[in-house]
Image (cartoon, rainbow, N blue to C red; front, top):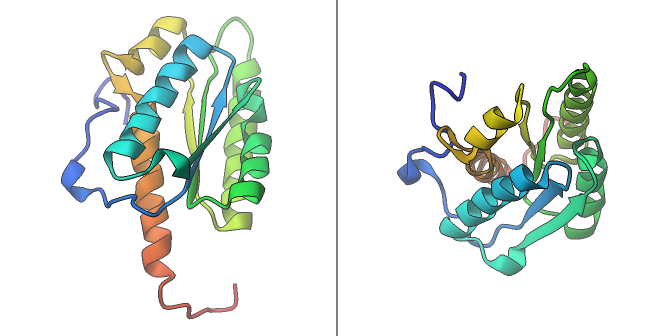
Length: 171
């Protein structure tokens, strides 16, 4: 669904489990930092709002969006979080570089999620221009960082709730 049809910051708070006792990693791209740092703020504040303690939120910065999967892997090995949220912004611009970066990052995060069993959340804006990015980083369409945090909370809770029984089918 297009964010023009849904505010990225709106969700049913009553359906979001507590994050108490959970650890989260947030990887933030410095490229387009005016946008990514607003996304980070929305993400971090949402985790705190739902019960996370600051010491259980581990943040690292990477140079650009392309480096998010590598940063996520580094953080995941060190901190072993319940979920990792990757925040970036790739504005389309004049070339097709955005397609290569976005596809590579998405595939890298999927691979990390499958290999580690830790949800790696794609909190990357892929706008056509800077105004669309501003509209989705706290502007008229909300904040994608909030949406990414809610996704991470839900996925971490899902993983914890389904793995309580420790029965395995061989994976």
